[in-house]
Image (cartoon, rainbow, N blue to C red):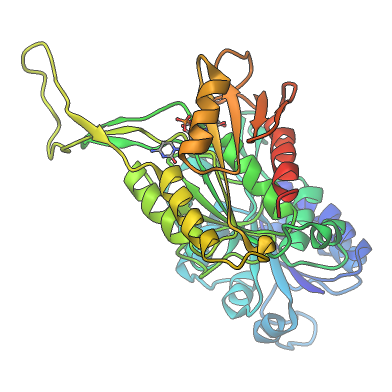
Length: 428
Ligand code: PMT
């Protein structure tokens, strides 16, 4: 594949050398376009030695005055990766400020564009950076999230450019490059090319403009499941409650694309149980299976105060009414869809998996939920187990089906996701 690599002025520019080496080794052609600030961090001679091509930086060649055509680069490329991408370049991309060769190339690009941001933690968290990124995501740019750790400023936080291996993996996976081993593995998975719905994270039920009823779900478990499904080549619809976490793999938000590609995650962001219900019921209609990992509020205030509720008197009494039971609604959809199938259409049956978060009489409650919500199996996690449930990076689960109970030891949520998806694929 032909890849345009954009390099901007960040200390992480030295990592671009490893990105080039990995891409060239995997058989791809790389054309570097570097900003003037980028050249302060890494020399064009190093980059052209690695790519075997002259590096493009200026609109005209200094030597003979020939014009560098950003339009031809836009047509030549199968993908554009900007790594590292500074806050300044992200801002220029979002607002079309075409004052250097990299931005004009981006504006002419016909191929998918990927960004690996690199900056200080406060710059990363700044609303202008986040709004610019959100704009770019809506326009279809894939953001490869930065990692957390020690930054060039010696502060610790999020903003460090992701490691070259992970950037290249995300890029090639998303492009379904045959040179990437994950794509060969994905092709072999029964999930490959299947649409799957995941719900993850908490829901917030508004009380007034400043308060809500929520819960401790971080979204980690559901995001790990979404990533595992994408790794196996599924088209992943992730309905995500309010959490700052996002998948480390390429993802799009629902406004950017009509549907996720194989191996990609599309996020529909929601806040309340009612919004999650609406998104999930809409999406399940086009999905073969769903895993409901979100911690959904069971009750919501029957009225939302228009203004902040003031402290008058001692007690505040809220009247709560039940939220829609999403799992139950999807269980009904599954029943009527599967009932309409011919007897020999086993391979087309919709599947539905739920979670149960319990504090006591765990197995009994899990089994009741599995029946009531018409689930194929339920993943039980108990708050009695140290390291299991909300917010941890680990979980301890028992997979409960109608005829089996399989208990797993405490594992990372990434490993737990693999166990759950392995189990789901036995039913596909
Ligand atoms: O996000 P993390 O911090 O990583 O934590 C992960 C987790 C603990 C949230 C996750 O592992 C988990 O257990 N999720 C389900 C939590 C829960 O709400 O369980 P429940 O027993 O109340 O609900 C049972 C099932 O019905 C769940 O699949 C739930 O998504 C679903 N449900 C519940 C209520 C509702 N109104 N609609 C639903 O669909």
